[in-house]
Image (tube, rainbow, N blue to C red):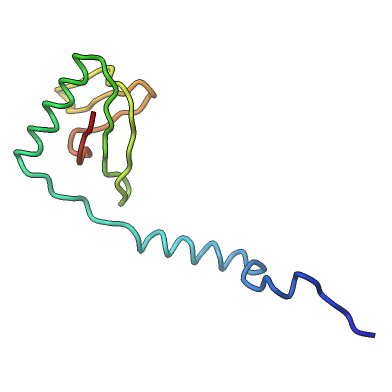
Length: 105
C-alpha cells in the first residue's frame, strides 16, 4: 500500500516557518538605504512647499525617511512647530523637518 502525502510534499519551505521569518527579516534589513543628503536649496524648496500647503489648507504628499526606508504620506498639515522643527499632520503623525526628503502637491 502506497501512502500519498498530497500537497504537503510540495511545500517544504513553508514547513520551516521560523526559517522563513529569519530570511524575511534579513531581506528587509538588506533592502534598507541610507538617508539621502538634501542640499540647502532643496531644503528651502521643501520648507516653502510646506508653508504653502499649511496656509492654503490643502493636502500635500510628503516623502520622509524612517528606519532605513523612504515612506510616503498624503495629508493636511495642522501645525508647524518652528522651535522643535516639526510638522503635525491631521492623522496624528509628527515629522521632523530633517526627516522630509521630498514633497508634492
